[in-house]
Each structure stands twice: as C-alpha cells, then as structure tokens.
Length: 316
Image 1 (cartoon, one colour):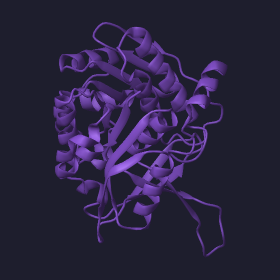
Image 2 (tube, helix red, strand yellow; image 1 turned 90 degrees about the horizontal axis):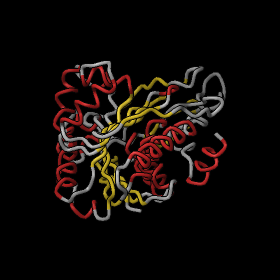
Image 3 (tube, helix red, strand yellow; image 1 turned 135 degrees about the vertical axis):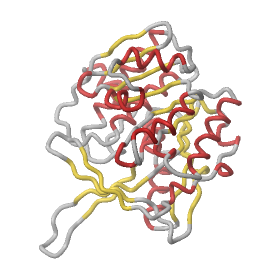
C-alpha cells in the first residue's frame, strides 16, 4: 500500500466546552482542515500518510503538529511562519441535526496561505499512491502556486491526483472566481470528488451524470459524488452507479465526514486498477467512513480505524 500525500489548509477548530461561570467561557481545541483530516483518516485506515502545509510558530501550530504526528502522519512537509502570521482558528457551532457553522479567525495572510512552490519538493511525493488537495488553497497566493506545483509534479511522476473540490462559497469573492481557479486543476486531476451541492455552481448543471461526462472530457478518470443521506455516486468513462448510505445512528457532528469518505476511497483504490468492483467498493467504504465520522465531536476524533470500519460495514 502506498502513501496518501495531502496538501492545503490546517486549522484549529474551536468548540464550546462546558460552562464554567457567568464570567468565563470554556473552549475545546480540535485539529481540522480538510487535507489534514484526509491524512489522519488515511493513516488510521492503515495507509502511510503525509501532510504538506504551513502553520504559525504559535500555540496552535505546535498543537496541530503534535496531533498529526501522534496519528502517524509525516509532517516533514510542514513549514512554520513567524508572528504576526498566525495559525487559523475556526469556531464551530453545531446545530441539532449535526450540521455546522464556522466563524474563522485568521491573520492576513494566514499561515496556511504562505506555503510556497519552493516548499513543494519531489521527495515529498516519494512512494505516493495519491496526491490530494482541495480548492481552499487556490484562493490566495503563494499557496495557490504551491498547489499547482504539487499537481504538476505529480503528473510528471505519474502519481494520481485526487482533487476534493470542497467549495466554500463564503470564502470566495464570487462563484465565478472559484470556477476560474478550480478549472485548470481539473485538467491535472485523476480523481475528482464533489458534494452534490457543489456541482451546479462549479460545473453549471444539476445533472450528476452530465457533470461526470464534462469531467471525463477534461481527462479525469474517476468521479465520486457524495450525496449525504442519499449515499454516493461513482463513475468512470466505462461505468457508473450509486451506493446506499450507512446509518450511524445519532449524528453528533458532521465535521470531517467528507474527508473520511475521500480517505477511505483513496486507501482502497491505492495502487490498484480502477475496475468497477473496486471503485464501487471504494465508494461504499467511503460512505461507511463518512457515516462513522458523524458520531463524535471534531473532525478527527471519530475517524475510524480499519478494524472499526470493517466491523461497521459487516454490521450495516
């Protein structure tokens, strides 16, 4: 089994803790950020994993690095930024249905935005089965160029690129700006993963199969679409299908569910042919991992191990 190399943002998610008094508020810090979540999820599922990014030389940067390293994630590709640049914080409010609202506290520029193309070196991709990133690093320079660099380097080294679009409209000036930034990376991607709600603003259609066809015309080999409680869609140029959802019971916090989905799929697809049986099984495993990720607070705490995922799929 190869290595999953994930590049991009990492933040400290801040949750409300137990009330202390009328003049004190308690908070709990938990590491997050989609590519960092993918790296941790892949490691728990038995794959080698590495994270490439940037954090501040601050309390939260130290915390995040300790957390990633404790999960077996290679952090040799993480750079540090001096004050006043800071590691970003995301305050998380959980609704009754487990959905989330985020309020970001970021320096300008934020530490994760200062990853440079020079920080992305060929040795970081040694032994990689997939390189993964999302669209958030495409918002600002120099991390936008660093993302292009790792995609182009992966293409040169024949390492498949997994682009988890992860479109967050409120972070962009406009949907059009997001489309313009995302578009060139589609041409470098082997696998594209989207949520069904991301397809209309980025690909201009409500039809999942039409969207997949558009991506295949761009050279993409596999399209995965997560559909929340409706399961997921998978397709290549030769086949397509849907898989059902898994019921995790009570949904506590959906943070990181999409990242768990992607990691489980990538680990199953690593170093294997993309035949229909394997792609369908990868999508099923993604749905199961995503469901399990909803059963506890935080993006990483509920990410399943390989053994837990296997038991859950057998019971489900």
